[in-house]
Amino acid sequence: MLTVALPSLRRDFDVSHAAIGWLVSSYLIAMAVAQPLGGRLGDQLGRSRVFQAGLLAFLAFSIAAAFSPTFPVLVLLRTGQGLVGAAVIPNGMAMLRESVPVQRLGASSGITGSIISSAAAVGPLIGAGLLSIGPWRLLFLVNIPLVLLALGAHTLLRYPVPQLIKRMQLDWAGAAAFAALLVALTFVLNSLHGGVSVVALVLGTTGLVVLAVVFLQRQRTSPSPVAEWRLFRIPSFAAATSYVLFANLVMYTTLLTMPFLVEEVLDGSARAVGTLLGVLSIISAVLAPISGRVSDVRGRRLPAQAGAFIMLAATLALAIDISNDMSYVVLGACLAALGLGLGLSFGPASTAAIESAPRELAGAASGTNSMMRYLGSIIGAGILGSVLSKDTGTPDIWLFRLIFIVLLVIAGLACASTFFIHRFPQREVPDEERAGSPLADARAGAARAT
Image 1: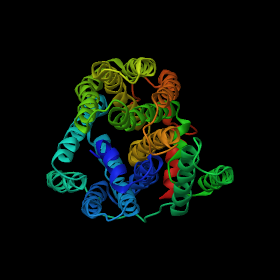
Image 2: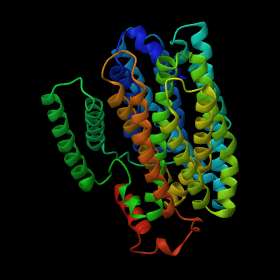
Image 3: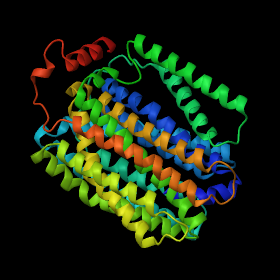
Image 4: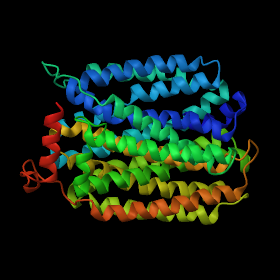
């Protein structure tokens, strides 16, 4: 919903494209940092109770954000939404992973993905409708009935709650270093197009390198690192998670680009933006459960590859056809093709990543996978800010073409990664889980951490 309101927010608070980008980036950074932590909390304290606590805290931050007096306060509260919302997604996916037989996991994940895509399809339309009758603050207040409905649904669950609470052990120092690293990355990306001094850019780049070294050293020595990095020794997990990162980078950058392209270049309305983004999400929602069932029968790799190459073709079409007089029909067709590719591929790739991990690491695996998804979004928002941050005026069309040329390269990398995703999941005790295998190492690391 908030995507369609970005131009309105920029005007109301009188901030630049780069500044409004921080409203997006702060939320994504918080989600990226907190996703694996939220998954670990669920592994240690119980997924159901952490899931519920995240919903309650998200409701509180939503109400507070609706009454933000200044732009910095809004950014702070939006960051809070990201931090507490990160407890919901990985634990919901982990509960799904533990509750569904592996032979039906693709179909179940497809249904879940369809519901998420449906919500994403409705979101821009609701956002545009609310903006037509009132201010952007309504977009935060509408979370009240949504979260209350979610809490009501949660009471119907019969998911087991552990009797004993394990000792909570999280790498808070590593999380702080990771957050600082992502902030530095966002600053450097937003500075590439100008607007800051050479000294500031050099200092930011130096800080980025230093923070990367500190973070990597911390993760190497921590008994309970931010993410379960050992899982990346599993080829299919690494490939599927890489695809999630690249695909989300393409998708999120496109979503953020559309409001500025349509409203500031094509002279369209927020309603037009909502309709176009709705087309993308609706197509993805319709295909997600079908793709999930196909992946259960034909394997995860085939639908992931098919969707990846369709996404590549859609991105190529946008890079070629974008212009000052581009018709909504052509733009809608390109976004529909992008939604087709994402709907075919995203569910099987995400399922492949989670099912590649040991069952007891489902929360950590889901959190790590979600973290990479949000990392892709952060880089995408940084790319957008880098290209559009020169001033507060109307951006030139060639800047948008440059964005999609960059995304074309990313889409190519996404296609390459799908060749290393497994076809069918291993069963409960596959050969790869024997002593000395990557999965055995990951389990041993998890046992030492808890």
